[in-house]
Structures are given as C-alpha cells and as structure tokens.
Image (cartoon, one colour):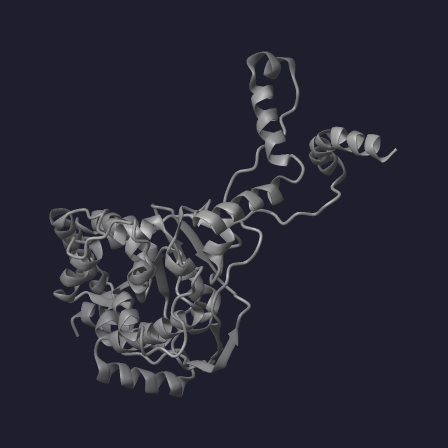
Length: 431
C-alpha cells in the first residue's frame, strides 16, 4: 500500500513545485523581503486590440509576469547566495568581492588603478577653470573649497582581489589633481590622504567591510576638520559640534552595509563592530550660520543626514552630481535651474565641491565648466558685495562688526550687510 503512495507523491511533486509560484502569486502565502537596488518595475499594461496586434501587450505582460512570479525574490537571493558563498561572485551594484570578504565597486578599483586617467593635458585645462572660478568667486565674497573624500580602494588596497590588475606607478586623476591643487591658492582638503595617515592610529573603523562610504566615525572626523577649515578661511566663529560619546554596535546603520544589501543574498555577511558618534550642536543665536552650497556625490549624504548643515549652516543645500537640488526649504528635489544658477552661487558664503576618487575624471561634475562659462565675460561685482567681502577678509574690521552686532542684538550677517551698504553709498557719493 505504501509503495503506490510514494510513487504517486513523486509523480505529483514536480507539478506541486511548478504550482507553488502560481499559488504564491495569487494568494501571497509567504511575505518575502524585497530586493535592494534601483530599478523601474514593469507596469501591468491594459489589454486592447491595438496593443495585442502590435505585440506591445505580450512583451509588457511577459516582463510584468516575470517580475511578479511567486517566490521570485527568495529564489534570486538563493541563487546569489550560492554564487557568493562558493565562487566569491556578487550580483548587482557592479560589486567586486575582495580578499577576506571585503566588498568594493568596479568604478573605485578602476580609478585606483588609473584606468580612467584623463591625461595631464585635460587635467591642466580643468585646473585653469578651477583657478579662474576660485579667483572670480572671491570677488563676490564666496570661498571655494575643493575636498576629496576618501576611497575604500586606496584605504583597503591590501584586500583588492589579486585578479584585478594594478600598477602602482600608473598615473591617476587623484594623484595629478592633488599635486596641482597643492600648488595653487585654491582652498583644498584631501580627506583621502588624511584617512590613510590615520589608518593605523584610528581607535575606530574609518571604513566598513561591506560598505563603500566612509564610516560614521570617519565622517565625523572629516566634518570636524571641515568646520575648523571654514572658520579659518572665513574668519568666523561657527556654532560648535560636540561628540557626547560613541555607540559601538554590531548592528550596522547608515551606509555601513550598503554594498552588502545590494548583493541580495539570504544571510548577512560577517563584519566587525562599527562605531557611531553621538553628536550634539551648539545653538548660539549670535554666532553666524553661513550660506553653504555643497556639490558632489553620494559621500555627502552622511554629512547631510548627520544634521550638520541644518544646525551649523543656514540650512542644507546640496546639488547632487550638480544636477538634482536637495534643500531644506524644498518639499522635494528639483533640477538645477540654469537661469538662476549664478545668482544662487553668488549668494553663498562657501561653496564646497566634495567628491571621491571614482568621479575625479569629471572633477566638479560640470560645476567648474558651467561657472567658468558664466563668469568668463567679466561680470561686474556690485559695490556692496565687494565691501562685504572686504569686511569678512579683514580680521580687525570683522571683530568690530561682531561687537556692534552684539550691542544691537542683530546677526553678524545683518551687521556686515548694513555697514557694507553704508560704506558703498559713502564711496559712491565721493565724501
């Protein structure tokens, strides 16, 4: 009696397995974890005679059905897990599995090896744009800061897989720009070099094992240095950033597992403990909150999410890849408006261009070229703007302005603007 039952079950098993995805699709028996990554989901197209005879309905239906078949997500995760565990192969996000399970992305390894080097001639041309923009922005009282974020490929060079070709003597965009920027009067911060020098001495991780961006602790060190740099360059006293301690945790937060998520495997990968600073901000109404515009790549998101721009600057104003505008005062992102581009730049106290090595084949992400084109025709500077710049760059004059602002109970910016306007009018009258 048992034998026929087993035979019947084995005969029916393939049909049951084939039926399960359909049942899952129709009844949602099991709730699966969604896949991570950016993609545009297929839309369910409405049937019509025209779409049928033109083949649009069939093609769209096939794509939609494939994306929504039952158990699709766990099956993809299972497939990815097998490839990752047995063959050190990752799917999604252009991820490269390095030694001891360290994750990288191809674009960072390419930049590290100098495979995206644009050549000295092109770099010299772009440096001329940077120097010109830096000089002209100073006339408007705007301080330009060029900052290089650290790169995991440089920091964890020893974990790059051996099959990825490297040549330590090959020229790179990073090395060339670094050398040339240090020879100019452009305000320049190299956090990549800073992190490499801190690598052995740092008490906490500066990069995560399965993340591509700097750790929260590394970001905190960089931001603290950046704020001091701005104070020194502008001769101002910003609200202070305090760290009230550190939360050490194996539960990864922020971007510390961003590449791990993109792998879409079943089980989380092993990693080390990460450290999260507990930040606090001074709120002194007499201290200046400068207008700061930041242009750059994804390394800026950690800074924005830390609360620094909203608490120490006049607000968050970030031009992501010099294309999408994210600001506190906008309900949602918007595309840069070229008709008001220069007006927005000129009203800033500081413009920070912060990007990592993988994007240095396009330094400034188009910002320097656009600004160069708009300023090369020798746009005149208003007398008031010139006077404001003169006040801000004169420490003694600025100190007297601070005292006047405190006496009149107004902001330093308002006091500078008032004095600059009076001085400009006085000069114009010839008195």
